[in-house]
Image 1 (cartoon, helix red, strand yellow):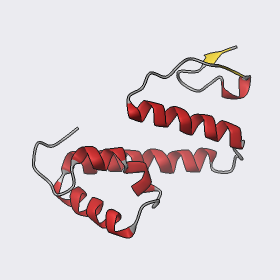
Image 2: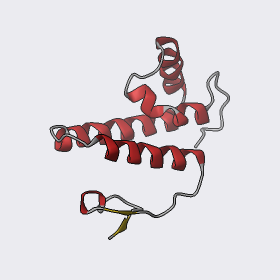
Image 3: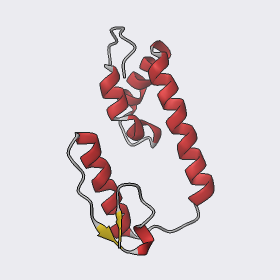
Image 4: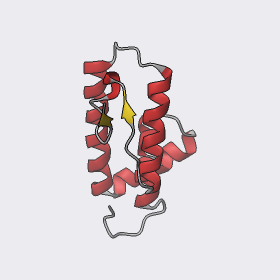
Length: 106
């Protein structure tokens, strides 16, 4: 996604690191660059707003549940594969993970 306008921080960079920004897992200087970008780029601002709303909804609905460390690791690994554009292999998982999209049920 890009608005087609030149920006100091490219739209692709902003979208690739959007969750790091949302989670405040990046240096303050990078957060400032992203904030400036959102002021200039309405498509990225819209995507940011959507992802922020989803994050709040998930926290409200699932925020009290403890997530097993191995499940979190597997999910984060799949997210990294998807972000890098690599094919995500189907894996059989236990019933606990059977509701994840792209995960084959036993």
